[in-house]
Amino acid sequence: MGKLKSQHRHIPERTCVACRTTRPKRALVRIVSLAEGGDVVVDETGKRNGRGAYLCRQRTCWEQALRRHILDHALRVTLSPEATATLLAYAQTLPATLEPTSAESPTGEELL
Image: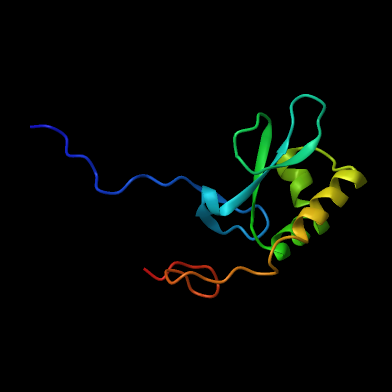
């Protein structure tokens, strides 16, 4: 008796540090505090070395995380004014809010 392979592939999930919503890893943006130099950068690939935190691809989460110093706490660093300005500039390229998918309610909870 062999082990049957599952029909569904495992999809890694991560939690947005601002709104605490769990989403698939690819639906979030990773912010990294680099080990060398301590710079804080946006990691689109999700593969850079360093301490990371995830945010939704919506401007409101980014603004909340920066305003309430949530990223400082999650990355265990104090963001410089230059890093904050860079992250805010990136946030301006994002939509204000995400459209809920068919499997989510407007509050972000799964309907299934």
